[in-house]
Length: 110
Image (cartoon, rainbow, N blue to C red; front, side, top):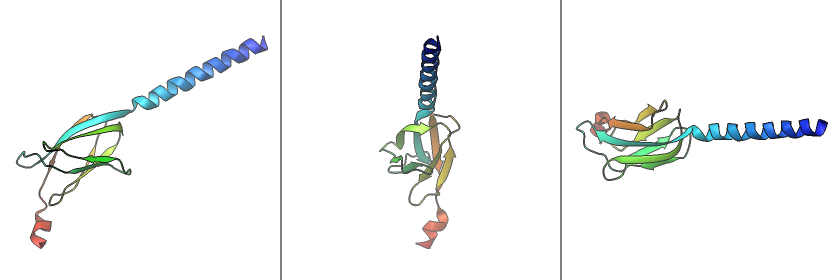
């Protein structure tokens, strides 16, 4: 009888472990988006990075980016030469459209 109960407990623990791992995996999402300037023109080569990590990407010729395996509560850091850097909290969103503003102060220093 003890052996049956022990096997039942082991089975339930294994089931809980599996369910927990599925929940953790479900929290990582693929984030897609577009980065444009104030005029709506796509920006090529913008750095889009997950804050606090080395994971990131750059925008393509259409200003689009795709970041896989992003925690749903992550914050993105978006930066481009001549533009003001921006942070974007995802808050569960999987699509973000980001508009960067010109850094007129930095341009005047040149």
